[in-house]
Length: 119
Image (cartoon, rainbow, N blue to C red):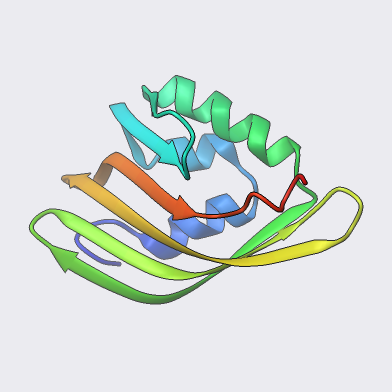
């Protein structure tokens, strides 16, 4: 647990492809930006966006290599392995910045190049 955000449980929810459990980590008015996609705002809209992404995957798993906490922000980096619906995989590095409001995520920025995932 770092800065009141249980990152182990957060990534477990993502790796389980559980959009509802993922959304429970967010503030009501959270902002989520994945890669170079436009930001999505609001917990319900983010949950729907993430659920659609999860439905396009056969599986996902994260390995977090490092976490840093500074001034209400948590930053982490590692690797994510995506399993496509055809069973093939793609592993890429990622970095996330979480802007925290208490124990919830108010702004979630994902820096990743997963352009080969659906190519």
